[in-house]
Structure formats: C-alpha cells, structure tokens
Image 1: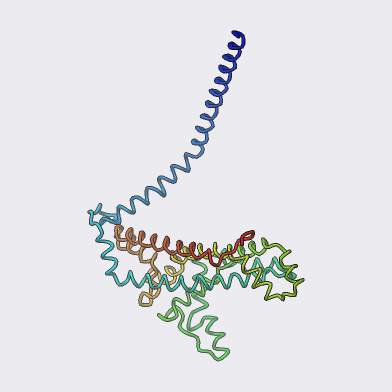
Image 2: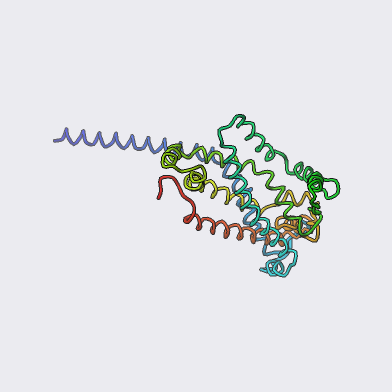
Length: 317
C-alpha cells in the first residue's frame, strides 16, 4: 500500500509539472501573438478608434482647425436640418445611388454573361472591359469632359450625325447627374470580374440537367444562372450602395469642388469636405459624417433584411 501511494504521488507531481510547463509555453505563445498583433492594434486605436471617438465629440462642439471651439450640444445637427445645401446634397446623393447602383448591377451581370461565353479571344475581351476600372479617376474625368463637351465632344458629334441634337450634359442641371452616372458606369470592370467568378462557381451539372429537360438558353439563365448568382449580386449591392453614398472624386473634379451648375453636382461627401476643409467648420462636418454613418447603417440593414426573399445560396432550399 505505501508503494502504491508513493507511485500515485509521483504521478501526480509529474502531471503537475507537465501542466506547469504547458501553461508556461502557452503564456509564451500568447505573448508572442500579442507582440505580433501589437502594430495592428496600435494602428486600429490611433487611426480608427481615436478619430471615431473624437469625431463624435467634435460633432457636439464648434471646433475648427484654428480654434478649439466650445460645446454646443446638438446645435450642429439642428443647423444642418435648416441648411438648404445639406438637403440638396442628400437629394443628389440619393438620386445618384438609387439609379446608378441598379444600373451598375444590370450592366455588370449582362456583360459578365456575354464575357462568359466560350468564344475565341475571350481573355482579350475580358481585359478590355476591365481596363477602364484601372484608369485613375482624374484621368477618367478629363476624358469624359472632352467626350461630353456640348460643342466639340465626340458624343454630341455622333448624335448629330444621326439627326439627334445632343444635350448640354454637364452644363445642365437636368443632365449633370445622368452624365455622372454614365461616367461611373464606364468603370464597372471590377464588378464584372466578381460576377464572372460567381458564374464560374455554378456547377455545370445544373445546365446539363436543364438542357436534357429541354430548357432553352433564356430558361437556363432565368432558373439557374440568376438565382445562383444572387449571393454575388447581394455582395455588389452592398459595396455599390456604400460606395455611391460616398461618391466624391468624379463630381469634385468635374466642378472643382463647386457643385455647379446650381448645386446639382453637390454631393454629400463633397459638402462635408467643403464644410470641414473649406469653411473650417470641423464640428459641422463631424455632425454630417455621423448622419452619413447612420444612413449607411440603415440602408445596409434594410438590404440585409431583404436578402431572405431574393438571395439563394447553393445547398439551401
């Protein structure tokens, strides 16, 4: 009996030593992991968390770059709701978002379907449609300013050749936003690539079974391709909506930040930038930023809620 007890004690002591060794090793691993993640954590705190917190604070003050400002509570928000340019910028942004995003999805899906056809030179055509998305926005703006020039632009020139009088495009309040939508559609190459990846993920067996059942090309597209492509469409809808609400570079470059003609090109982020860095009203601009954040969150939540009705994932009924 004493021998058995002694061996049991030895086993217990050895197991405790092993546990202590494992605990020490795990602590070292955790420490090394924390050290490797420390640069990212510092960057997150300094460049994301801190600006977010300070933006919320500045939205309640009259802070500007030159003066510390005073605490004004919700005055910036109440002033915004009485600002005509603020409402014009919201209208322009929503107009652009509600038209451009669905159009970009339709154009992107149609182009992806054509580029997915098994034809000679398929890679060349895909490259040609992707190249415009690689052009810098400023260069894109200069090109389209020349193309849409009402006097000597190529678009109006060819419209005149077929007997159509071209509109003033960017110089008109009625045509400025449609012109911007047309320019933005020119760079849908990235979305097309994502749609092509989604098309490649659809199993060929579905098409073979549908063809055996006598389904034609349109029926296969309607009952197989589009439903199974809805997860990709859903992703591009989210990304496209957020990007459209933050539209800045094209309208700012086109109008030199003025939003002309008659504020028809004054988008929300443009007005936010002008208020903060043009008029030095950082508190006012911070309030605008938080309103934009709420708009993005609400629209994104609505899209996520709606996905249950129209997004179909493979393997799920």
